[in-house]
Amino acid sequence: MISSRLFFRLLTLAAPLMLTACAYDTSIVNQTAHMPDATVITVRDGQAIGPDCNKLEDEPYLNNGWLQAVHRPEVAFGCATYNNLARMIANPQDLVDPKRYPGPGATNSGAAVQRYYDDKVKAPTTGGSTTTAVSGGGQ
Image (cartoon, rainbow, N blue to C red; front, top):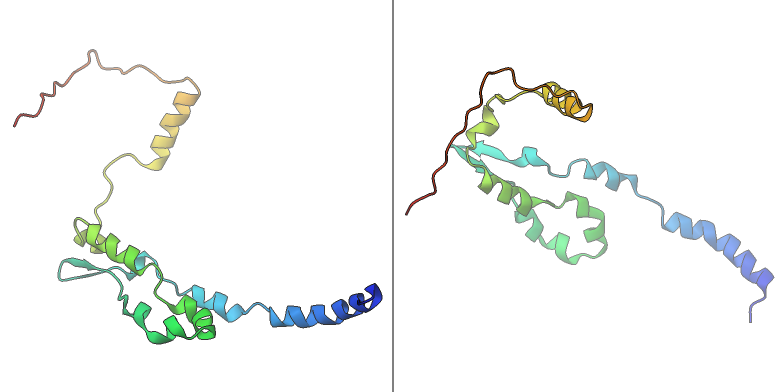
């Protein structure tokens, strides 16, 4: 049986070694800055194109153990998500030349909500109200 004094000495000597072995690799953090985001979706010939997911199938990333952990941030994470997003875009030209939002800005909308909270909502100034009838859909 190990005495508590010997155990404490071993622990005191081993702790710095364990911390050194578990040192945080800052190069991995710097690599994550290059992870994909929505800018990987491009427009070519009127179609939205997602990123290339072939890098996910490369052997070194699948079977090399330590290399797999070290290079994991380089793998095209989010590839399927961005490809699916590219397929859902109704008008890819909006990515190249977006239309300006015709509605009220955030300032006006926020002020309207604040008036509601402050109970300062005014009745409409028009003399009457209008209604619109909507008929049911036929087959």
